[in-house]
Image (cartoon, rainbow, N blue to C red; front, side):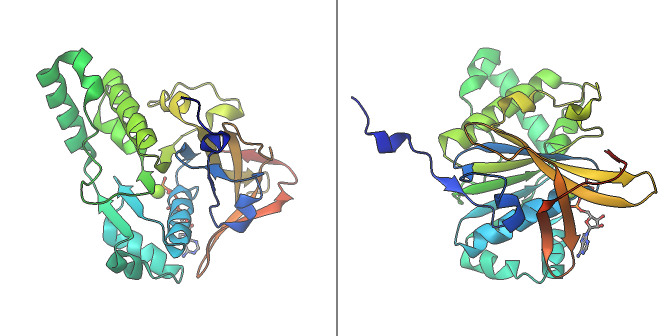
Length: 261
Ligand SMILES: Nc1ncnc2c1ncn2[C@@H]1O[C@H](COP(=O)(O)OP(=O)(O)OP(=O)(O)O)[C@@H](O)[C@H]1O
Ligand SMILES: [Mg+2]
């Protein structure tokens, strides 16, 4: 059967972060898996919390899966920005849940020994709560999941492939945080754990810690890749502001002598 043209048109989402949405001609295609990469403290969690809050405002169902900070602390960060996440939790369109990465590594191991390696492909990833059907999922972070697989890179890869396939088949748009000690695409040549996920992802957003020669620091952000979307290719300034959240200055390029880390 030939499908109508309109069935090939993928809806796009805006993040609601004004300066950030200017990177895109249309927006982030629905159902995409987007990596949010950056060094320690660069602002990955806060960037994702900003997306979460904006999506909840629009009535979307959002799931935040934290392998790092506990629920309470994430809620407290949001309240510092002047937001009211409890309202969305009560309404039932927000779920913030903390997971233990070791549980996942263990259950993948159990499934492997049970199902013989070839059959594993069909097993659902164990971690999405059954009673909640999210449209947007944020995972903080793939790096934490990866370290729980301690050296079992092949198992981590199998798990990631399942997870990406699950998200895709449920048309869930996802933002997956990945901590990078060195942004791999600015010339460093380090093979990092969990590197395989770059190939699986549809998009990559990179947040930088900028260090100037005079010792001052700033934050910066770029969209490194977004399959099928015309993106503005540049690195611009970003800030995290009290009572406001993650702000992107799309018209402010970095000036002077600096390094990106
Ligand atoms: N209310 C706030 N106002 C201003 N800046 C803030 C506020 N809350 C957090 N920050 C800044 O955000 C930084 C951390 O951001 P975030 O937790 O998003 O980084 P991250 O990349 O997720 O770090 P990690 O790798 O540790 O998980 C803090 O170091 C702090 O400077
Ligand atoms: Mg974080």
